[in-house]
Length: 94
Length: 144
Image 1 (tube, rainbow over the protein chains, first blue to last red):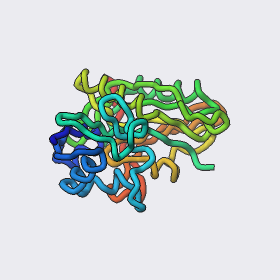
Image 2: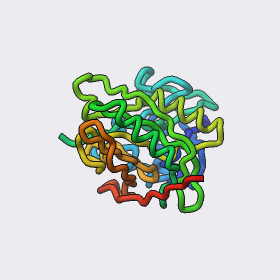
Image 3: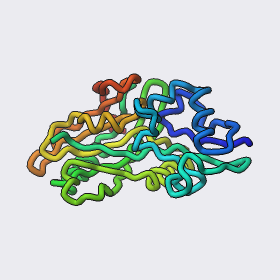
């Protein structure tokens, strides 16, 4: 099924400047996998070296954080809207 | 890519950083990307939601649900989030290792040093494509 993924501003240059990318997927993991297969430069910013989604990278299905659903196994229906949303975290050393 | 920001906007950043001292304060830089410039049109001050009280002197957080809301609101006004700012109380205006781990390329990371309650240096940084380090970003002050 076709789902849309909203790309945050700082990552749009890796998807040809698009705000949304359509992929074919049945789960959140499949959607992100399809996205990063087509646009491999996204990978290092979304995933850490151990292959996990970076802690500050959130994925929403509609208004719901997929961590509150079934994480990467969250099923998607045709026309679903996913959003990749970075949390903003910072701080001084020490 | 240079960061274009108004003098009044820098004042908002400094004042907010002083008001939250000794804790960190911050917010979003809203505006537009124009050619090789990130032009800030609005400073969106947002609360520090880092959930450990004692750590807010060294940590600042805007959580995902707030960012989702803010990004949608900016989008509805045809604005982009072009970066964010946060303070380093009693530390230099240079990004930390924690900042680097949590950064993305193409955004401007503005850090304001607050020394003993007084805002000092305000510097801008951008993450390298390979995530290895930040590079200083020139700031142009636009007082229209």
